[in-house]
Amino acid sequence: THVVTENCIKCKYTDCVDVCPVDCFKEGPNFLIIDPEECIDCAVCVPECPAEAIFAEEDVPADQQEFIQINAELCASENYKTITKRKAALEDADEWNGQSDKLQYLVR
Ligand code: F3S
Image (cartoon, rainbow, N blue to C red):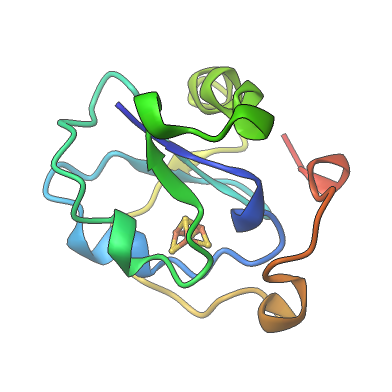
């Protein structure tokens, strides 16, 4: 599977969802996740993300490993719904892009 990591939090650019052939993204209040049961590892979303937040599971950086579990868990959250079309990024997305320690702001 592929995994959405920390830099998506508070950005949510959503360019990723437009290219997904299997509609495996789910949207929460300030983050997107990839449903590991649906992702076919095509990788087309990876270069689309302006925040460079998407990685193949085997390439997830060491300090982002917990996001593998977070994607899988939030898949079942009632706050996360399938998203198939791009929408406006969150307000201040450009200011949050690249900031560290954003996990504390994740709305599950
Ligand atoms: Fe998030 Fe990047 Fe998609 S910021 S919503 S993973 S384009």
